[in-house]
Length: 226
Ligand code: ADP
Ligand code: ADP
Image (cartoon, rainbow, N blue to C red; front, top):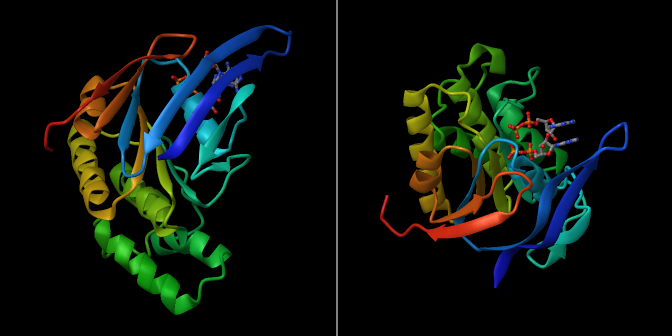
């Protein structure tokens, strides 16, 4: 049974002068529970568009997305998101960023603290709880974003080039961190990248997009141990 079903999803953007860009051709794709799937393809092939549709931040021109059998028709806390450009709330500390969604849900303070402490430790941010995003390196900000996404216990983690802006050494550290979390936390992950090494290193399944307009050209099962 699928965790995520992408059924006949296409997306056409209309420009201000009526010109049309077909960003995605109809896509059928299934993600199983606990899969780590990378979507690999060149810039502009529609990877972000597909991820944004799954996130509920954009809508398909045709087709639909089901998460645990439920129609996706907007953003929701059941999808944890991490983007390339840091999207932390700049006016909140690391701990406050991580607790944001829990607070929104009305979780009791003590439980919020326990949960955020757990994920702060998990992503290696102990000692940085009270720092603001601008006081942190890019890698640290992405650690915070990952912790914030996980704290809500989402059904799926959606990441769009999350390590694309980091230097090589930090990127490898972050890849290993995310893999470790995936292996221990039993999460379903959809990860967008244009970096073939990253795609193969991270995933147990790689969906390769063709160049524009986006369609899935082939799939690779990666079955070596990390
Ligand atoms: P990728 O993530 O693979 O780099 P995108 O999904 O960002 O590709 O973009 C796919 C295509 O759709 C590109 O041609 C891009 O310019 C276009 N596109 C994406 N978002 C919009 C938008 N909001 N309006 C118009 N065109 C868009
Ligand atoms: P990436 O290449 O990392 O996917 P882009 O720079 O293509 O990112 O897109 C960043 C944002 O701009 C996205 O929200 C996308 O939907 C939007 N966008 C991309 N291309 C266009 C476009 N031609 N017109 C309007 N918005 C666009």
